[in-house]
Every structure is written in C-alpha cells, then in structure tokens.
Image 1 (tube, rainbow, N blue to C red):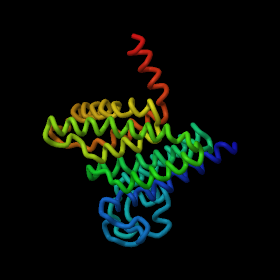
Image 2: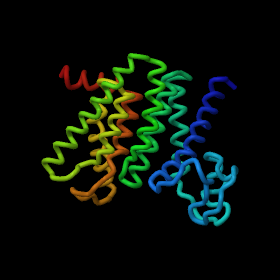
Image 3: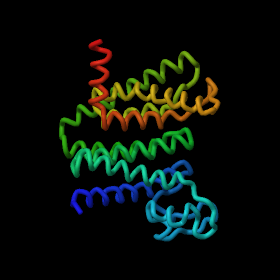
Image 4: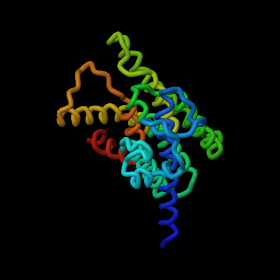
Length: 261
C-alpha cells in the first residue's frame, strides 16, 4: 500500500469526523444551543449517544440509518454531511498536499458546508459562524503572508461592496430586501479567501447557479413562485467552492470566450 494512499484515507476519515461535528453545529446554532456542552442525543427519543453511535459514516451504515435505542429513522442528511466533508478534505489533500493552502481550504470549505446547510434549513446566515471561521482564516493568512494579507483584505472589501450595492439598490427599487444582509457578510468572507479578481466572478456566478437550480426544480415539477423566498447562501457556497478550486480556469474561459470574442 502506498503511503500517499494511506495518508489520503486518513485525511478522508479526518474530514468525516469533522463532518460529524459540523452536523452538531448545523443543528444547534439555529436553536441557540451550545456546541461544546451537552452530549449528542437522538433527536427522537433523546437518548444520549455513545462512541459507537457517533463513529463517522460507519455508524449510520451499521445501524442501517436507525437509532439504536428507539429504532426511529435517522435522516440520511447526517451521513451525507460527513461524506461530503470527508470528500472535501480529500480533494484539498490531492490538490494542495499537506500545506498552508490545504489548511486554508479545509477551513474555508468547512465554513461553506456549515453556512450552506444552515441557510438551506432556516434561510438565515449566522454571524458567529462567519466571525469564527474568518478569524481563523485571517490568522493563518497573516502567519503565512504577513503584510501581504492586505490583498486578501482588499478582496474582502470588494466582496462586501458588490453585494452591499446590490442589497442597497434592490431595497430602494423593490422596497424590501431581495436577500439578507448575511449574504453580504458571507460574500465578504468569501472574498477574504478567493482574492481579487476571483471574488468578482464568484459574486455573479452565484446568481447563475441559483438560476440553474431554479430551472432544475421547475423541470422536476417543484412549483416556485416569483416572489417566493429561497435560501441564496447555498448557491453562494457552491460558487465559492468552484472558484476556489477552478477559479483560474473559469477566468481563462471567460476571457477567451467573451473578452477576445
């Protein structure tokens, strides 16, 4: 067995373990519950869960998606969050190896997972999540880049300016918010990592991704009203992920297709 494969396997399990914790964060933050106090429990029977019940991925498989104690079905969402986080950590390792960029990306993508799922569930983006992860990212950037972190801060300001302008102008035109201020703050955090000019592309790519999913939902028969509120955060998170991984390729495609047309 190659050492690189073995490291990749453990990185995947490491990510899945974080995904298990992120499930707790996603569930508890909207309920204003502590994420550090209190043991994990079954949401149906409230029985405290032990280590065997909480082993990432495998517990869900071995328990066949049911609580060990009350046999109530467990949402597959918890399994998918663990799987997704494990895959993201593995992708970061394959792309960046164990490096400064790896640490930045797993931190950034972790924020996107938590924010995206919470917004999908509650249509709200919580400042505490953005503040905690952005602070960690700022510290890592400063330790690695020193004074050059100013470029990241500038890109964060660009991200804020773009979405705040849309937020402010749309509020004047439509007499109501077209998206929440949390989206403005999320775009600020995204800019901090993506830098300039990727944040500009990411800011507008979110709208195209949102439109794509709306079309898909419409085609499969889900009715969406013109004035219906939808969570925009997940589309921003998908856009940010794509730009963090394929940003330069997307920019090159845009330049060659539209600018040099």
